[in-house]
Image 1 (cartoon, rainbow, N blue to C red):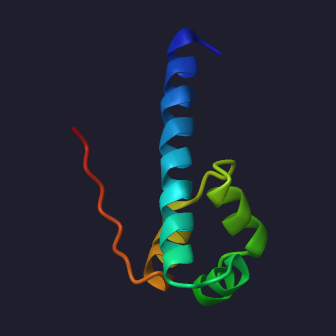
Image 2: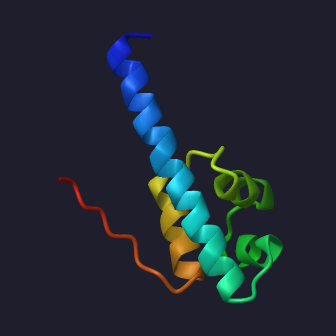
Length: 79
């Protein structure tokens, strides 16, 4: 792994960590359990748990499914 790869991985890990915290916050605010979110979204419970823990890298499809289940939209902004 090159130093560039290490830097990119750190950036990606931080992004997934923030994403997981956001999903957990919105889910809890809506009064949903992880199991309910998994069922609503069609994403496995283990994936939801790992996402919220910042340990899961989601496909874009699964991210959209989770967002839709929470009544959110996915918006990407590159700067």
